[in-house]
Image (tube, helix red, strand yellow):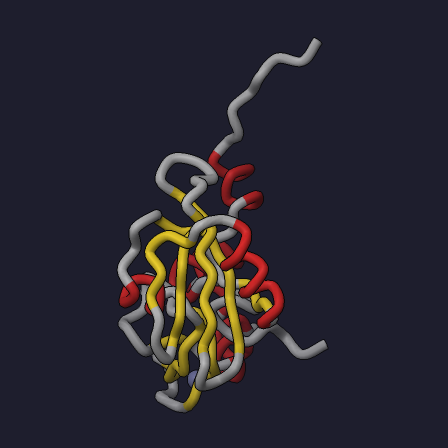
Amino acid sequence: MNTYEPLTRAELAEKYPRTPTPIDRERFMEMLECLPPDNWNMGRIESFQLCELAYDNITLTCVWDHTRNEGWQFYTEHGATPAQIRAQLPRQLKCSVCAEDAGRWVQFHNQDTGWGICRKCVDWIKGPSRAHMYEGHEAFNRCYGLPGVNYAPPPV
Ligand SMILES: [Zn+2]
């Protein structure tokens, strides 16, 4: 017989990711029509939240950017304002190291708004001459976030 074990924080984070995942228009419309949408905001960037909560006050949020014709889904606080939802979407960032374009990524909370890091500077910081300053990936991630989310991943 199974006993009920609540999910750990790590398991919750994996099951209900807060990082925006791209969705197509079909998925956006499907989610919009499956339950009465909550917190529905129309406009250039349209967003709504599912009325059903995933855990605590967290629910699935879907966004459609009518200008870019692209969509995103992620889990966040139920009742988040349109500004709070937009703040969680990928945006054009400048590199906090060299001030050049860092690409379009999710703002990391430990960087000033609008700032991230470009791939060239990631490689430079993680290179042999400076790697001692960060003592591995964890310290680097605390400053700059995650590759593929907050800055460009290494080329494949
Ligand atoms: Zn840079």
